[in-house]
Length: 115
Length: 112
Image (cartoon, rainbow over all chains, first blue to last red; front, side):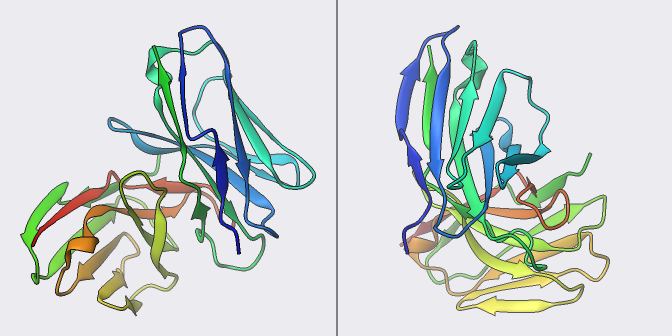
């Protein structure tokens, strides 16, 4: 069973640019979540999508946005990049339903560097 | 908001030693999760705990869900070099969704 796939793995942008990251969840998983990981702030929740609808949103500015497609694939976009946006962006997928909250399957991440 | 505090922040141990780390919160969590992150990888779920007082093992790993539902610990017995990584505790930020609150992580280094 293929795992969560994130592209690109690495990218370098300059301040003011925008970036789009892609995530393909495990087949059959309908929930996709995004997390930002930095040395200073750790792992922070960005947002979650389920059946093409945003179900939860973390405390990030509106420059951070996302969407989910009908095949459950998801993209996140960051506009007007700032130096502080440099981070590892992790995507996680999970099944919907039941009480097994938290059984997230993470991708390897997209490492963004903003210069 | 909800926060999880992990300790210790880092550990440097000899191969073969046992390791213990814990996670505490000022608020109640109904689920406790332990993840491990290897360098260059995403976190991988090690153990999930769903009931207060529950003690669960996964090979050399044992985790417990505290009775107060405000803490959890993870033990690793007879550590080996591949145990190196960052261990995170996590709890759901809201029920039955993909929103998790993560602790700051415990970095484990094992000396062969």
